[in-house]
Length: 355
Image (cartoon, rainbow, N blue to C red):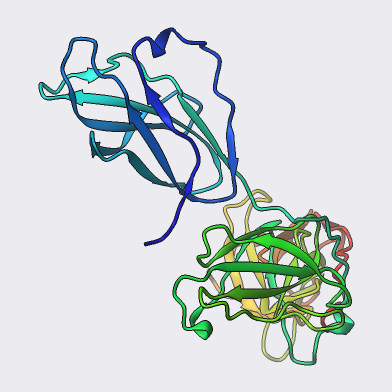
């Protein structure tokens, strides 16, 4: 049976509503799953012995309450799993054989639990040690400081490991630090980084038999690379114009886009008759070649605005468009739109990495 953290006991006793009305101090934990025990040392002042107990939960600081779980009076504890990080308030009510609740008024929090990210045992500031990555290795890119790491305990032939340690590095394995323990010893493990950067991770799993993996040594490369990138790609529409040729009149769009890890097809182009849309796809998921041409057809409006949409591998997105519309009326000349671009992104610190 999986062990869970017992965080606090709720005591039901006569007169508990007359106690101090201030909020109880929050219990902080990085575990998402824990046990809430209770002790029925008294029951309904009317004399009816409780036959069941209800655990009431509020996820919005007491504005709304709901029954999270029900248990027989002799059960002694509730199991709770937090769906996400945040603060949870709990209260317990008894139910007698007549179905009467006690207390029968609006619940007040008897227990507050703050489920927060697991932070590093000591701060590690990651750099961008891309020179340490073996050729062909790709980092897993995320656009959040908090993310989950999966691990497998099957190598130890032990479904319930005794200890799971996470080590991390911010310099590509030159030095290592202990991040912390996975309290519930169950994949995945929640990680919170301090800054953007390229992080390396190493899992050490110890089985109940004492068999234990090796901790990383200075200079060893990470088992897993994770790039934390919350900066939008650089994106700029250079020009959009009408080009006449033997194949007929075409719209040509030229752009500049860059990021550390753009996907293979990171660019999409849209058009609209208004600078605020609604937008219609002109080209979807194309390569970042800097230029795209398409033939004019009867479905295109006589004038249109062009928008560039660039997405990097971490999921960050940037939009850029021309301030003035492009005329697509076929003519002997070439109608041009101004080359000034809007929404130009700031230079991305990852630009040029992982090439």
